[in-house]
Image 1 (cartoon, each protein chain N blue to C red):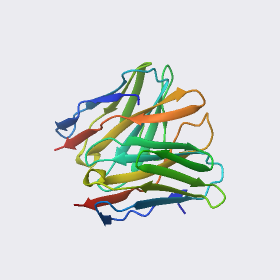
Image 2 (image 1 turned 90 degrees about the vertical axis):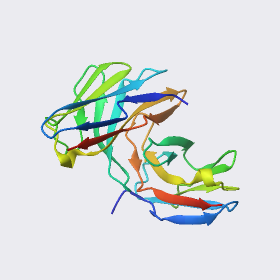
Image 3 (image 1 turned 60 degrees about the vertical axis):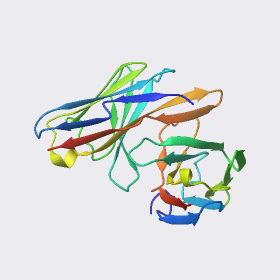
Length: 117
Length: 112
């Protein structure tokens, strides 16, 4: 399957600082990437859709000024958590769909665990 | 009512047993169905991908889709302790719609 990477895998930051998480598609181009948040023992919650060359589309209830998304190229999307607070501590996962013929398969990165102290 | 319902478990079975995992959904527009496996503190891994109704087999895994009942299943044969993980069903509407709708995930433990 296709490979999606994330960096960093784990980050600890102090309250009030900003943190940037990178998502890369390593062996395919992705005009669209998705950012999810996952709390312990819960399913994935879609935060936003990242679109290369245009603004991201945020899900209802997600603060776009707090979670800044930039899709700089066909292989890179970044999520910046601005002015992080302890309640932003979570597991953040990105995904990217790749097309193969008539199918779209979506592959996930390994996730980034953010802890805000 | 959630669009996709999945029993969160936990489900615990002995090694070698056949495991059956299920999801139901309410939106008849869903056409593409996926099963992901997620180990603790890792990203989900795509296991099976099925279009419309029918069965698909890959090794010890079989995915079934019954669109008339809005019901999908994943069967794991000869289950192994390494199969212990959370299994998430996911689905989407049509080829151009890339956004997935996930079930809650079922936590599975295979006991040696």
